[in-house]
Length: 120
Length: 119
Image (cartoon, rainbow over all chains, first blue to last red; front, side):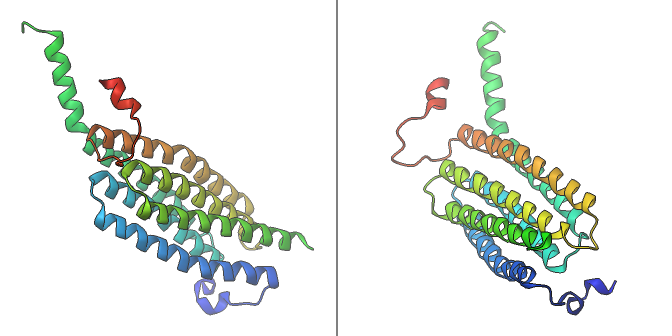
């Protein structure tokens, strides 16, 4: 369990190892900035679908953040959460799409029934 | 150069590519003029970014001695395949729903084939 404490991870690797670790440190900043941009779209989005798209992208960026964390700590402990997060993001997007589209689909179905059975 | 060093350099390359595409997706999500352009930017960018970072973590942790190789490779490939299938499907459903709901289009839009098909 000492593997999870941050001090134990800071062992000195060779220079390529340190290069990747530095890239991960920069990447955390980059992903956080990208998430802020997504939140701007989430708050501003004129249409409901814009907000749903922003939440979907936020979920993917959360996956990226978890990947960066497990690269930094060199552990596979969080990898199952990546699977669950990608499933949840997809399910949420599909649910929002159904929520947006359903009134129109219902309307269309009613119109079709009206035209098919004129004397009913 | 040892195998570990080559793996690390490749991981750094894929990590940089993934981060670049992630940032591109977010910038496109804010800067594009209407919903359809935004879907175009955000979905492709975020999908490629996630896949790049998954490849990076696969290459980086494979050379690390106290992580089992079969574990990381199986899970990463599973997530990559799922992302490649599920993400475009979700974006397609969402933009179809938005088109049904008459989401506002860009003012310079030239043609809309779906709308002219439905008459």
